[in-house]
Image (cartoon, rainbow, N blue to C red; front, side, top):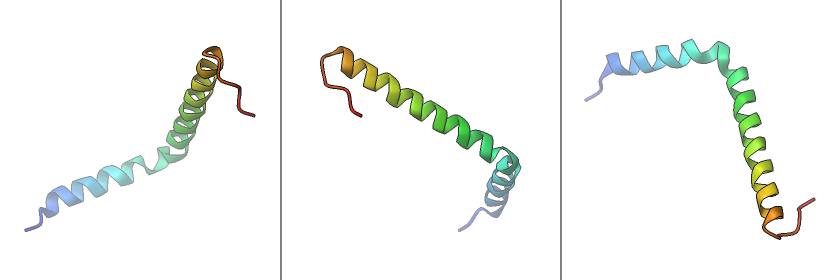
Length: 52
């Protein structure tokens, strides 16, 4: 029913990524804010009022 070796491999991968979680979070938030800023500028160029 369960593939324990696959589950162990997934757990090992997740644990190996633990030291990088903060940098990955920072990169994600930076990309998210950049996307929101770009969309806001695009909508402003299209004539929609800016959001404060």
